[in-house]
Image (cartoon, rainbow, N blue to C red; front, side, top):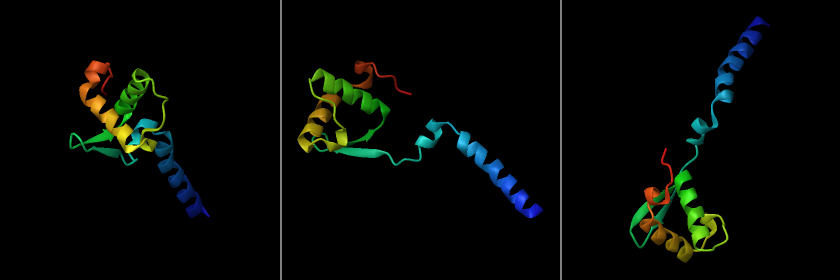
Amino acid sequence: MSRFWNTALLSAALMIPVAMAPRVLRADDKAAVTYHDKQHNDDHQWNGQEGKAYRIYAKQNHRKYSDFSKLKDDDQQNYWNWRHEHSDAVLKIEVK
């Protein structure tokens, strides 16, 4: 019976740091989504800064916000065209 309790105690001790790890550290486990910009022939990784930039784009262009992945290809391309003209510095997006 003591072997059972030793195993249970060890398991709990190993699980506590994982359960208490900050959410930010665990966010890296997700596969990053990458979009290809056909017109500029480059790839863009979707992250927090890109999400902020897209919200600014939607507001400036009087568009209803919708999930970028669900936009039509032409609408996505319009965003990438706009994005190439608006860097994080121009948009005042803090890069972490």
